[in-house]
Structures are given as C-alpha cells and as structure tokens.
Image (tube, rainbow, N blue to C red; front, side, top):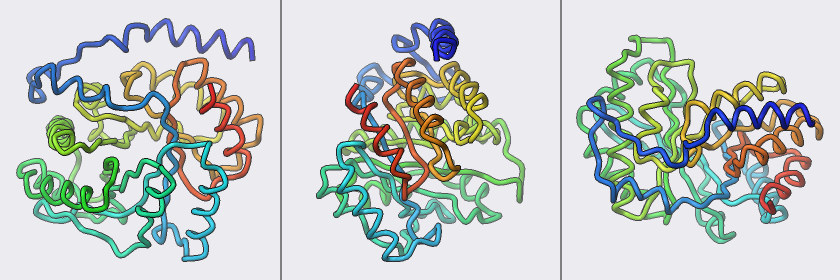
Length: 299
C-alpha cells in the first residue's frame, strides 16, 4: 500500500493545477462567458452514483424492488442514482422507453436522480441520428428538459456510444459532440438541471480535452470498468491526465467479482487522489461495495 501511495502521489504531482484551469474550447467549440463557466460550482464534492439498468439488463419487477430495498438499507453509502429512461431517436427526437418508473421512489429517499439518455440497443443509424441532433439540437433540448423537469430530476446522464456498425466517426463528429454537450449543459443550467456524460477512449467521438472544457458538470470515465487492479490504476492515472479533476467521476464495475481487497485498493486510491466522485455500473451491488463506499462518504 505504501508503494501504491507513492505511485498515486506521483500521478497527482503531474496533474496539479487542474482545479484552477481556466479552460477554453477555442475555435473548435463555442466560447462561453465566465458566469456560465461558474455553473459547475453547484456540483457537490461527494458524488457516489450507481446505475440502474432496469428491464434493459433483464431485471424484473422483483429484481427492481430488491434493488430499491438495498438502497433504503444502505442510504448513507451513496448520494445519487442514474437509471435507464430515454433514447435519442431520428431527427432530434427524444424517446421515452416503457421501463419501470423509479424516479419518485429515489427522490423520496433524498437521492439525486439522473435519468439516462442511452444509445442502447445501438441501432446502425445511431451516428446519423447524432449528426442530426448536432445540426438541429433545439427540439431535443426542449423535449429532454421538459421531461426532466416533469419528473423533478437532478439532471441527465448522456451515454451515447457509437458502434463500429454503419458510418465511421470523424474528427468533426467529436468536435460537434463537445459543442452539443456544451449547449445542452447551458440549457440545462438555465433550468436548474445538471448534465453528466459517460466517456471512454475506444471511439473518436470522445475528445476528452474538448469535453472537459464544456459546461457539463460531471464526466464519468468508463475506462476504469476493468477487473485487473494494475490496469485499473493505470486507467485512473490516465483519467487524472485527461479529465479536469473537478468534473471527474471514476467508474467502478460491480459485477466482475472484485474481492474486498480489490475494492479497498481502488477506494483507497481514490481517497489519496482526493476523488470523491464515483460511478458504479451496476445494481444490484455486492454487500462489500456498500460497506466500503461508506468509508469514502465519511472521509
């Protein structure tokens, strides 16, 4: 553990000053004024958010009820929940899926709620739909903000993952996506809503530098969804290099049979890196996660 601490401290030295970064998107993404850049100050420092996949991962009503019971029992161990709800459709449309409604139950527990805007089940025309909404975002903005306000959501979680099927992602797509996210966050903030986005590095759609310079509140890195501890630590180091610390949410995966020692190592690494923002894919979560997460919340 002492060796781990030394390695992580060296990572932190390399990333010092990220909290004070005054970012600009320059020519590639629309400029924004200082007041709008300050919107992220509303985000709490501690953020622990599991995802509920609901029927999309084969959960039935009994499974979902058990997950909600798990939330009640372990309420002190987390702060927010994201859950499947929406999809992007053709021509800048928002699709509301017929899934179990959990928002009001989560709100009653005092949790932040983040309905997902998903790309599942990854239709072959999805990249085309992305390009449509990048070119004409207003109908989508109007729909998603109205829907989020109707269910009194805290914010929205954008999880758009183009696949290798269909046309290839271009550099311009990455620029347009960052610009879209910036505009979405501005519209959301004007309506007292927040925006998180899930990112990785396996598609060119995610330019982490550009996305880090947008007004999105949280950037959830899926690259840390791995079982091997050495790989996980390297992905954490890369995350600290690529994503502004004040926005970074580090992903943990709950369904890869991590031992208590594995989970403790990762949570200790996050504490040493002064990261208290964690996203967990997915519920239900093993009991060891709940007990150990509580130690992060209490730091």
